[in-house]
Structures are given as C-alpha cells and as structure tokens.
Image (cartoon, rainbow, N blue to C red; front, side):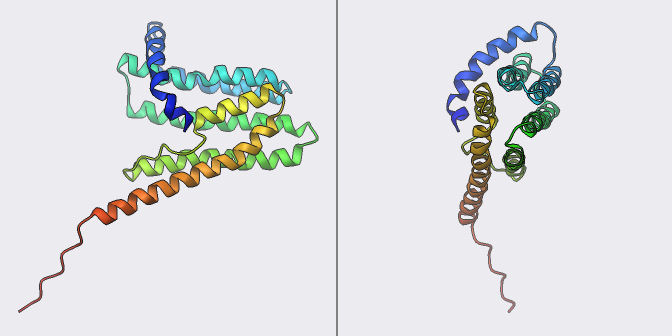
Length: 208
C-alpha cells in the first residue's frame, strides 16, 4: 500500500504534532469521537449538494484518524480499548460519508448507478477491515493491498473536489474488493507456509 511506504515518515511528524495536541488535555479517545462527529458533518455537507466543500472538509476530518493515535503514543495512553474504539468509529465514519455521497447522487442523473457503486464500494471497504481483523485474530498480519483507508479517503476527497464522485466510486468499487481478496490470498499463503513448516505428527506406536 502507498500508506505503508510513507507510514514511517508520516508517523515521525504526527508524533511531534501529537505531543503538542496532548498539552491541551484532549484525550486520544476524545479525538476519535470528534473525528466521527466531523465526518458526520462532512456527510451532511456532501448530501446538501456541496461536493467540493465536502471533499475539502473530508481531508480535514480524516486527519483526526491519525492524530488520535499520535496523541495516544505521545502520552503513553495506548490501550486495547482505544485501538478497538478507533477501528470501530473509523468504520462508522467511512460509511456515513458514503451515505452522504449517496444522498448527493440521488439528486443527479446518476442516481441508480451511484447507488450501486456506493453499495459495492462501501461493502468492499468494510471487507478490507474485516479481513485484516480476522487475520490478526488468527495470528497473522494482513496490512497488504492497494487501498487502505488513507488511500480511499484521499481518492474520494480529490474526486469530490473535482465534482466527480463517480470516478472515485468506480475505482473503489473494484480496488476495495481486490484489496480484500489480496488479503485473503496473503493469509492463505502464510497459513500454507506454516502448515508445511510444521513437523508431521508422530505415528501412533504399534501394540506388541
């Protein structure tokens, strides 16, 4: 993923920024909730027909998805619940923005096509996250594929700024499911390698 390649570079800057934000006393979990509220506002702006404003605000709102983690690291308050809350509310944030795009498209001549693409793209986005969560629960890593959430947000935001949300939806409808399938294949390969490396079970001893 593109985000994986630049992740280390971005985290360094975010950690410094997180230390600054942490001085305000705002907790990482509070920032996570604020991010969801902002994304609901973004969805409302898009649904109201202001696609370009929605695209710009989407980039701002999505920054909270990264800042909350930076604050948690800066303050040493990383917790399993915090990670769970962040991942769960991220899914809500993404889906509510898709809902805003859907309402926007219902007022255009692309209503039927847009509805299908929103459904397919949002389902693919959720499957990407589900595949990773299930892989990690099984003891594997699965941060592979084309479009993690940062790429999806940037693509949708840019196309909204251009007034062409359908362009993003076409790409996302395909790329999200390719990413989910990539993760499935990745975990299958890891599991197969693990099975081959495992020593065969000893045959039961024969009775005299």
